[in-house]
Image (tube, rainbow, N blue to C red; front, side):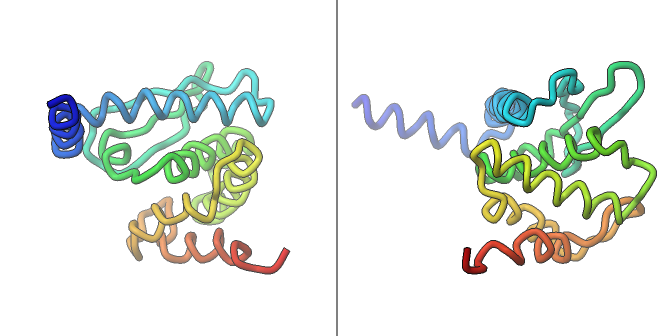
Length: 160
């Protein structure tokens, strides 16, 4: 009976976005803290979320600064590595102060984020799959996800 109840709770969490969202943001805060501490980024901006269904995150510099993740992005994340890639990428924007460089700043923040997340014990090769799911959609500030995926993963399977 206990196993059936536990299975039912897990199924409800999978099909109910509002339940999984609350859990996802708590997990995002834990991953974010690990990235900040491991990479000695004391003074990093706080992490916030917006209940927007867009698959997006952004960095803002006003005041103490902040990094914001959207509900839609958290709902799309499949594992800790994907979430770590997004958060490390946004930290890369903050560290490098590169919000004025669309496209090129994205690739630089991807590279910085991959290094930072590996240092924190996450796998950027696994995390990059979220970019593949973004496909070839291009926005005014972001190059296509497929190209970013290939740029991040090109060294993943190389002999070490």
